[in-house]
Length: 315
Image 1: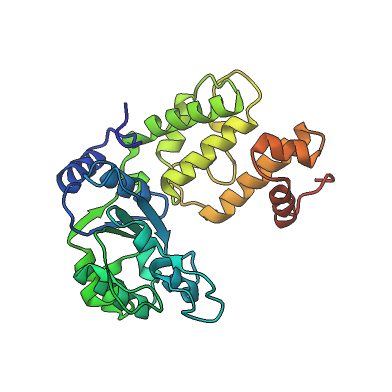
Image 2: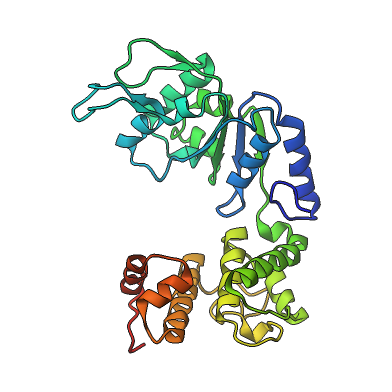
């Protein structure tokens, strides 16, 4: 049974698990680094679940997904009348997470002003909601994550030195999937079983030839890319036979293992998504309501995706 939802047998991931066990019950800040799709939030959740804060809130905040002008309110909240339009008191993420863990993903995108405010919160264990006169004491374990080299960002002057060292007390570096190849068969089996159950499909397995192609793929999108591929293969599968190398998407996988990729990750996944949606639409006679229901998404989302991917019944 995998621990904390992590599936692996590689020595690099075993080392990560050892670090999680060693640091979970400390209050110290953690900095998780790794490429996009390596599972940084999963590691943060594992630290929280393995700690004495597990019964309290785990709050994840993607610093890159929230506009800078809204991030301060998102983190600190505000008092009624603090600014124009503040008709009610709003509780921020920090107050909500009091006693628990805050996970700050893409920390490198935090603007300099909020970097200063965050540093003060970590150091003094208190903060003021916008418009408040009295500081509020908090007890929070901060875990930050970055998919860039935060030290280099600091040296370039893009990230505060004092905040970097305050966050980097307990560093965890996650290996990319291409450096833990022995985990690929386990992960693929897990994802195929998961999506086979979800979509009521029967997949007989995968041939050694196809597995060899996948093991030697560079996986620029890491585990997320493997998960997306697994879902696509299951959805498009119509026969009770093994997946072979020729069944893999020809724009990304049907190539010599040592050859450099001819298409980047985003373009490859766009192609996968387009093929997936087109096949579901074909199965439902291009009935958007039925297709959306089968995919588990809202009809408006499907319509938006069709427009984005330039899909219509003539394709």
